Length: 93
Image 1: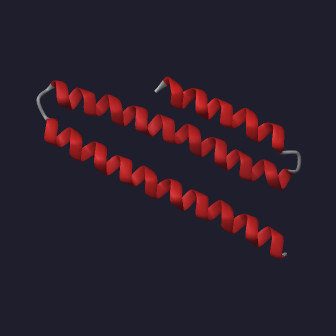
Image 2 (image 1 turned 90 degrees about the vertical axis):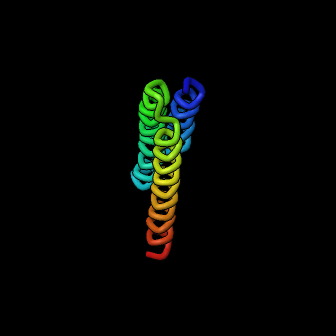
């Protein structure tokens, strides 16, 4: 978990060094917010699944973890497609 937080913070600083115009800042902000949101969602999922396992609900924990992981992956793909769409739309006029 701490590695994911360090990666998200590193992502924020890296994006900030590359952005200087308002267009790039918008896309950079979307990328940074998405990375922090992914860390938060998956950390909460981890805590919830750990509690389920402690209570003896291993199958439920595995199903929940799989479902949330796939939903997070789908959400990330949608965000990336949205950002690419914005960038292409801005380039074409």
